[in-house]
Image (cartoon, rainbow, N blue to C red):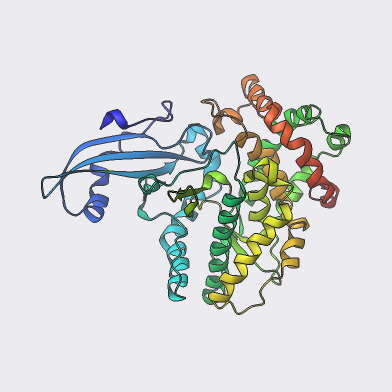
Length: 426
């Protein structure tokens, strides 16, 4: 068995307490006909640079069954980052308690809404175990790779077929979240914050100041006409924080949903039919969910995930693809409030309170997404106030692939008012 197992991140330190004994309860429920564990192997689940807020481990368990046969099970184990590797900063965001509520309560309820309406829709992987121990929260999930689910190469982006299916799935999730709120009342108060939390203001401001110099230097190298103008109009730290805070504004008359909050290509997985077409697509990672306008997820997703040749060309069309499916879902779930028009959703893409998701995606996520896998690409190194940290940050934004995307994307968003930081002057 060990010959087949590949560890995509040899540098990941896996805690000793993740062992056979820990999985006893899960196996008793999931594989009641097993007699004993023959072999227990744990490796990293993903390569470096694919996830910055948690530790993801794949566990292989070889089981002897009651009938004498041997069966191999694999599970995904997700836990918090160690404090010294960036975990203490991340914990201010309350990601894991929020995700526990999503898997324990809300995602099963959303799927139940569709079942009651006669539709079979799976939004997320099955969560087999949630636990808090010594202040840390842990999850054990079904391993979607067993059903041949996989991620798309984040550096290439999604083609039109993948974008369409992902936008449909996002619409299914959003619609159920809106109907659930209509029927059950508001979500807990922590669901009003996502990437931006009042408690994490220092984290945001420090990160902005740390990246600002490298970003402005790189802007002059992307080949943009009027690059100096964009550098000159780059936000001040105060403008950036005012823009960040504005995304916490929720308008009761708007159509609001529980945004996924971190929706990009690595947080969805697909499996395929023999002809290569997508069979199923599923969402993962519900740590940063936030109640608010769906434009927040849409901006983030389109900017970060669409393949370069269609990102700008299909920008407005992507919104329409999402809206078409949203309307179908809201109708089948018998949403009682007014259903948003396409005009409503399109105009919300340019609203002041949603623009943070455009700028944050450009400055924070896109440089990392377009950067090839690298063992040094992690939260700890990216936020290090050292010469090596500054070199890594400059490498990310000076990457020619990133530059060739930004050459067109930055002016495109700027011309739509999404990067107009003067709007946030007090």
